Length: 150
Image 1: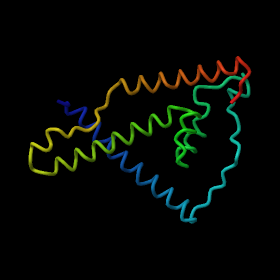
Image 2: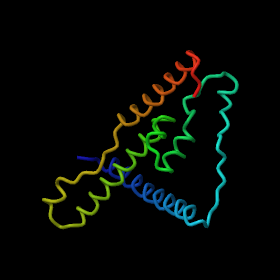
Image 3: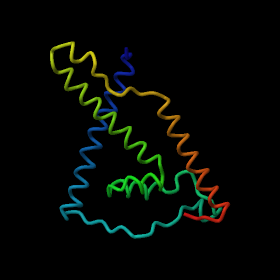
Image 4: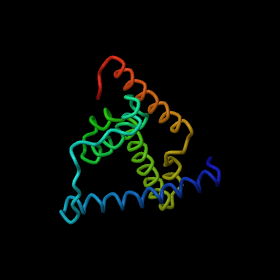
């Protein structure tokens, strides 16, 4: 059973998630309809940390991962920075499960709502994300040690 505070936080996140989805769909619609033109360069300059140290920072690849994800290339997004598709999947699961829960709760039958539970906020998701960031950071820099630059 969720406490009032947990439920309230999830409701706020759900509303923010809906606003984000609407803004994202509007942005993508404007781009694909030709009403908004954004010139993206083919190369993204390396970060300052990379320029100074020659090593990748924990966020290196994030911009390219978001760009690949928006273009629908999930594999490239994962390879650039696995945290980006991880967050996208969590976001989708959270939004879908809470939408289903909201629709089921609007029906009067408690039998239907008893089994509909939205994805709960858990600290494990945060820790898994941090672990994913650290692992990809170590792997990329280990490759640098062996002379492989991405």
